[in-house]
Image (tube, rainbow, N blue to C red; front, side):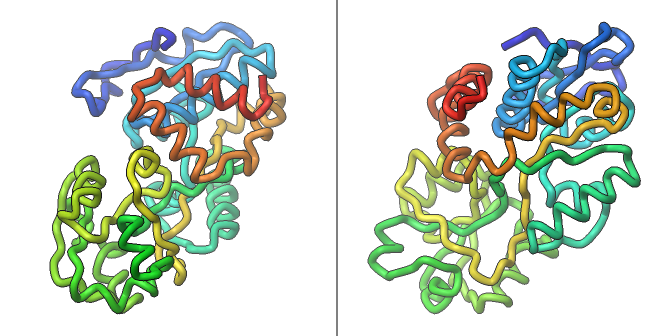
Length: 299
């Protein structure tokens, strides 16, 4: 990985490994340079690096990287000019930063966050990359096939005999377990809360029958699990797209042209495979990002 710049002390953030990452003020940049930021988990690091490598391949800009930021610090750093570009999710932007209710319709959600981010924050949403990293329920594939289960509605009649697993806190969320059960008529015999990293193993070994997962998690590539269709659209959309400071885009309009090749280019299945390469096969973020560019003919 390339050497990362340091943040000011007031922006120190803890990452998942327990180390700290920091970044320096944007005033240290040279002319014709931009800073790409990313949050402190695999998919954000990977999409951030794809953005960085695309800009290096398709523009003459010097690209600097500031990675492993918490979600809040990533957003604040874009607002105050310490980073220029970062990958973000429509659902996160809508709920966490615009403080609006979830919107299930993906196109409407994107329209709202694009309009309001520019109006309120001077941040521009470019074209979505295509994949939706939202919540879903998964079961073992043999169970799905034996019971002809493809959707959440198919699952409902069987739930009185099933154990449901989810992350800590999911039972207490306003958009979590109980509203989902009410909408679909779920009546699980038991619920178990655990760390998301343990969910897939619990599903695979049969300690839980149904698990609340993320639709692009790399573990879905390694295990024989079936992600069920949310046929009543309970879960909101979390489509990923590059977000750019408006003044940066005005100064360097070639950024939009370079990054618009990402429009609808990556599926959930693609991201499951790429995320697994990093999290499961322990390949470097830069290596997998370069593979993505190569597979899509962007180099």
